[in-house]
Length: 130
Length: 392
Image 1 (tube, each protein chain N blue to C red):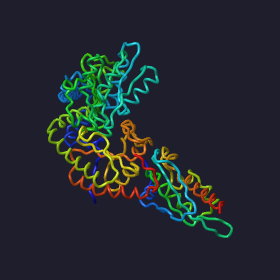
Image 2: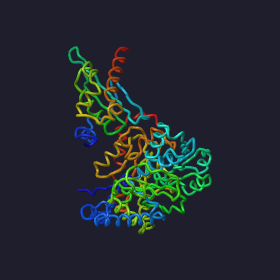
Image 3: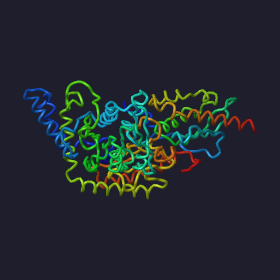
Image 4: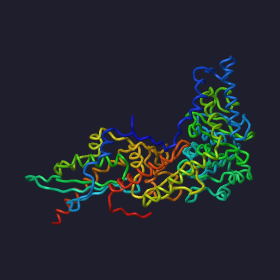
């Protein structure tokens, strides 16, 4: 079996929502360069009725192929979802949607959901200050 | 379609057509067991003897000093454990380096944990990965039974001063082992000139087949066998001889000796073009290992703010084979133990990329890499978070 499946390779080749948002409502970071993987998530939050949802999302990642694919997939899963829904996205959900990650990559490279949750926490802490 | 470019020859090489041709009859024509008395067996025996002579010629030793094994990992295990088992010292100590192949390093760790080995010292290397013979001498204790230092490193290609180290070992009457797996294709392996007692070889790094290697054992060296069974290989390594593999290893070593100097010069020229080209075209890149004292075919870079595996994957999509760290560690997430031992930061070590050329590498291949690689690095760096603490 190849190390990476077709879905992962597709996200590695054509990452979705790559880049940054200059006026982001929340920014979250996970990992560190000493481990080899570093991810940063930028989110814009809007309201629909009484629900807050992610209207735009971008990522920046330094890392292996899995790290890049995981980041890309996480942004796709989060875009348009409410903040409550996004907070429930786990590392396993991302790995499942990618149709499986190599076991040795499950923890080190699968940090995008952590970065995303931190971006939402960042948004909440900013919103509380206003 | 673009020509595929294979630059991972330190991981494995393509079997030379001439090697393959010599091996083929020994699969289905001369297929007897080399230990059998009948014609089928005796024909195989004659071919094994001839191959052993070829290996002996390469090493400048007698054929009885060549023991065929399944590869360099077994040869390294054999050297380490065989010397431990044969030593009658009460306490046993081994000296090695922190940049050895896992086949040496993990073996030392394992037998220490199991209690067969009392202790081992890993003498430090400088920033180029070179072991100092003086440090080896300082590490010697009355309990030292073996010094094991590789001839050339598999990741960064650094060539170790093994003839100086062997002199020190000899002075203290300690057995000296060297893993010459990567060196064999390029460097003189004359065991008399180098003063070696034990030397590991592998077939598939020198355009020979996988699954075959050898351990040179100087006559009179105090070493036990580690694989027990029949009386094969002068009662030093039990198991039916891998006849096609042995034929292949013999032929590969014969070919290595043909026109080695010219071949090395050609590969060195291409490697230097790759090193200088990449260094000029890619900012914040560093060459790992010694600029001169390195194998002719090795170029190992560390690129800041980019991760090695994603470079390897991107190059692969372009039809170019490379590696990050060594192939054996590519499934582990830790940065290379070799680069860390050389004092390179973990952060930078994650951005390591190794190209290892072959006799078939062409100038066009290098031109193509130099065209593709800078674009890949730029793309991946653009993907990385911008605000990074860059302290190298």
